[in-house]
Image (cartoon, rainbow, N blue to C red; front, side, top):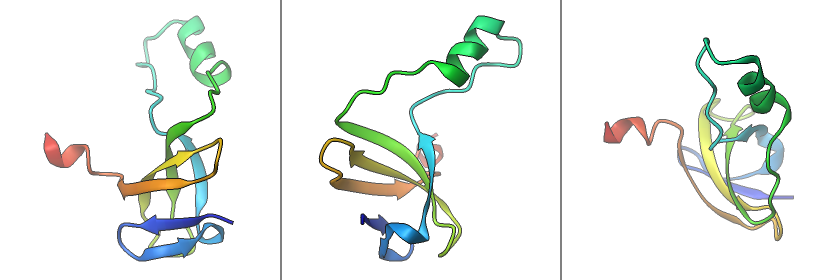
Length: 89
């Protein structure tokens, strides 16, 4: 089991969270081609190593967070608020 450091609640068990996917993938614009949408939905790289992922603290504060995790070792490297990018705009 992973221990995920929620930026709002502190360290919590993985069972309190719901994994919501890769946080680095950008959704194509509405007018994108069918091939761009196909690639967005069905084809992605799946490298092992460090990833930034979306997690939802569904059984806790109910906030979205970004978690940096190594998929090879399952080590959690850190976390931040989902809005952290917006605070720098």
